[in-house]
Amino acid sequence: MDQFRTGNVSANGIDFHYIEAGTGPLVLCLHGFPDNAYTYRYLLPELAKAGFRGVAPFMRGYFPTGRPADERYESVLLAQDAAALISALGADQACVVGHDWGGAATAGCAVLAPQRVRKIVTIAIPHGAFATDYDSLKGGWHGYFFQMPFADALVAANDFDFIYKWWRDASPEYEPPADIMESVKATFRAPGTLTAALNYYRHTIHPANRDPALADLREKVATTPIPVPAMALHGTRDRPGRLAMFEKMGALFGRGVEKVLLPGTGHFLHLERPAEANAKIVGFLKS
Image (cartoon, rainbow, N blue to C red; front, side, top):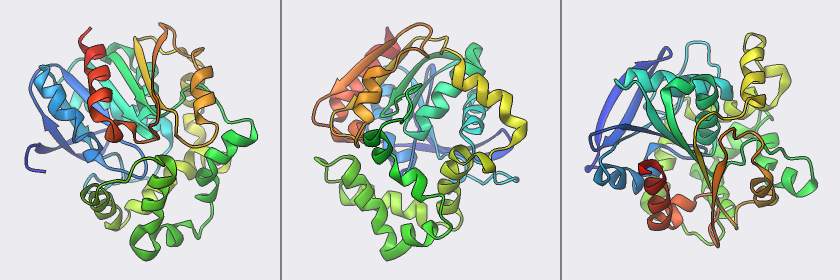
């Protein structure tokens, strides 16, 4: 998209491609699945207007960002990526915004590198709340389906029709515009991206696929209260069980968490009602 500058930077051993807008204090914006950096197409211009430098990288493995040499994609590694990106982008400290897997990376970054994080905002991710009941497990069915070796082929079938239908399930009152869906599909058509994205689930959820060397960091992220100011946004029409987990979360926010609920929105609430979501995010980051 022409209104954004683009760039590349090496961080944590990976060549990251990013889009950005504005100048000023850094706001690192991390996307989730199945998506790409352009999920922040509406937020980055607002950050620029507010005097920030908004930078949205394509996450590890998502073309045109590179893949790690060891092909590891655990969530704790995403947190390390975020911390490394802040430094690589020339900042001592940044605010971090994350949606979905990007939200997990955001929370993890605040725990692992609190000296680099001023504030965080998470979108559609109930940090510290876990799926233990039927509805919550139903809402995360895809994470278990992706463990199957045939998932890659089924997700890619019919030009990634799975992705379109997943978006519609996750945000049932939102019809994603054709240009947004084409942008996401174009990312996933690039060789290697789909497997990398599914490996986020395979390496994080399945115990046999986790790197034993990361055990201490996993434990730290899972048990340490976030030491910086936090805001969390969520919709009422996200998948089953997610709202209940959002409402219960709070124990792992050491300085509290400001919860913002946008009624009628789903998992992609920042695209469904960008004016409302952006106003909340920018207002919190400026306060």
